Length: 178
Image 1 (cartoon, rainbow, N blue to C red):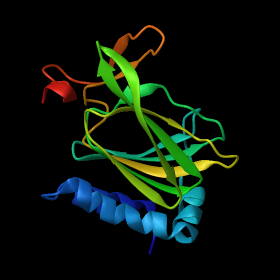
Image 2: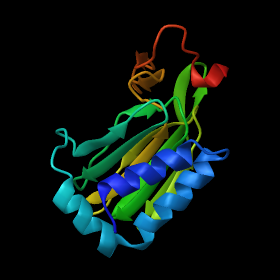
Image 3: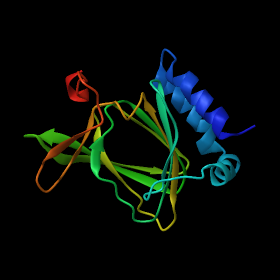
Image 4: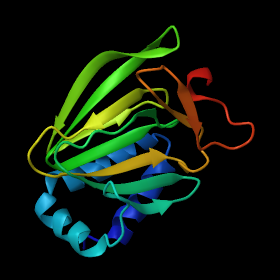
């Protein structure tokens, strides 16, 4: 039976496997391929979210699992995750603009459109921002390898090029230096 508890347990087990990204992607394919099953579970059981529409479902040393429900036109800040990520879009569309650092400033490299049902994988050092280009809400499950509270990551101001560290713990190594 589909439940948040079963999804989190499956993501935790997958993230602890020998090939975590591939295993998590296999779990999330169920979400993308069965929005009629999972959509009602999220609508019923995701009861708290921040002002953007992001709900933390689970976080520990192995995995962070989030549900996102973003309004049309939403655009995130430019950021990295500091760890791998697998995103399952089950309603709407998530456009990802990826950046490369050139002279310590992010410059657009490519745009990847992920319409529902769709999956996207990201590496720890990927810098991107997301945008909901559609007139409907973007609904997705985001899974990250590890605890995002303690994972060293950053965001960037495109106008100034200033990088702002986020998260992390003492002695953490930036993803681009691993």
